[in-house]
Image (cartoon, rainbow, N blue to C red; front, side, top):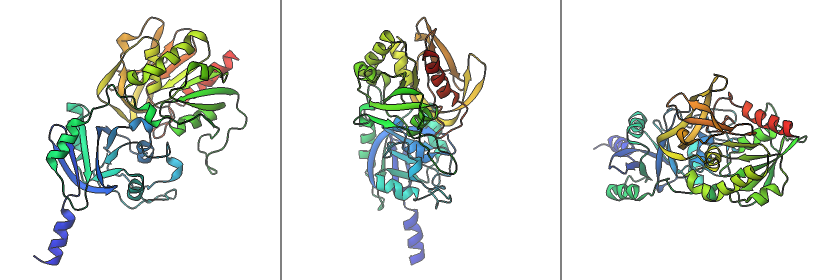
Length: 390
């Protein structure tokens, strides 16, 4: 065997492995960190925003399969992190990340992942993998990256089968802030980046169940003086700040598990005050629980920046960004609670409001990070509700 042939064969040897709990194995090329991790596997259909997705706290406990093949082509930069560190357990892509080609890039994706301890797997048939997720539901997986290509397949499958899954799991406590803090940074604007909110009109308390930074920026841009509290904050702690409105953030895990401590707090706010309440994603689900509805685990969830949602009040269709594996059971909504938005993919609930009360929430992400900006009006609606109460 010639040296050239040996080199080709060595480079072709798989250096990463994705093992599903049912025994299905996908081999690929590893990048980023080395080692092994277990998680639930989902797929995301967004064409942009891989950095925002990897740093979205709602992806705790999940490995993300990207259906769009060009991942890594714009690099990464500190401004686009949605939280301090990547939260998704790893990524699976079709093509290995290329060298970045974007004026905002400060680092290669592969280096960023390695430095942050996250595994990437390239060279995978993501179309086949996505079909498997759609047909079988979000599987439990183990991913491994070994530059030498040595894998104990039986052990990896066993690790995937031993993963407990997200049902019954409270992950908000893992991703929430350790203590309260103020937020005044607004949405990014050319050419200076993120301006500061120095003339706020409303005091808002934001409960951090895994809040994305761009949601807080949107609140600030809507004229809010934002104080962020940890997920376990009590109603007394919230009301002690005398807020004009309460915001319930996005986050990971099972809403019923997080709701064990969050739902009583929300109920107290609703029962003892008339202040506006606005929830997104996990915050939407926990508001529904506080109102007496139920949540259910979805087959494979909604993850992407191209999900059509219909506003039932206006008939308008919005293209939205989504990231959730649980949903509110529409049939369980009690009297006095109205479904406001539905998914045009599967008819699942995407929004609710209380009748005659400034209390509403949506399942999707109107902060558009990543994703379209069709739904930014919801932040303005929240501000208008606080204006009307003033």
